[in-house]
Image (cartoon, rainbow, N blue to C red; front, top):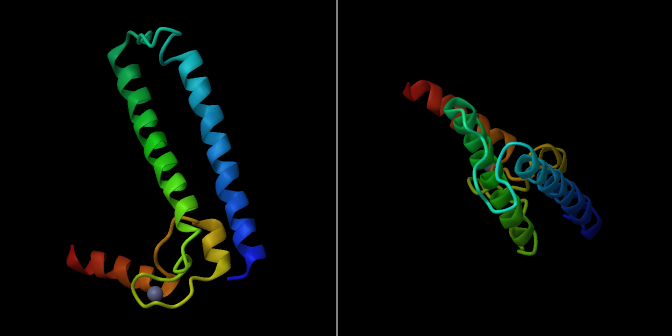
Length: 115
Ligand SMILES: [Zn+2]
């Protein structure tokens, strides 16, 4: 992967991180916590919904931050299964993927077969 391709990918990831930051801020402002960190949402169902969203968003954020760190490493963009380069197009769509299209398809069909 060229430095130029890598910086384009990094931009994609950083944009998503910024979006998540903005969404989290909104979450805090609207329905989550007040300035003292106290839960304002009273209704249980709503609270669960928001916590789910928060949980998933936090996880995605962690994933993206880890990915930024991984981009520094030499084996970034290499399929963990077969060691081939993952196509740039695929990385642009799914920056956090660890497998090339072929191996992922393999894994998915393996899963289906196992069920
Ligand atoms: Zn592969």
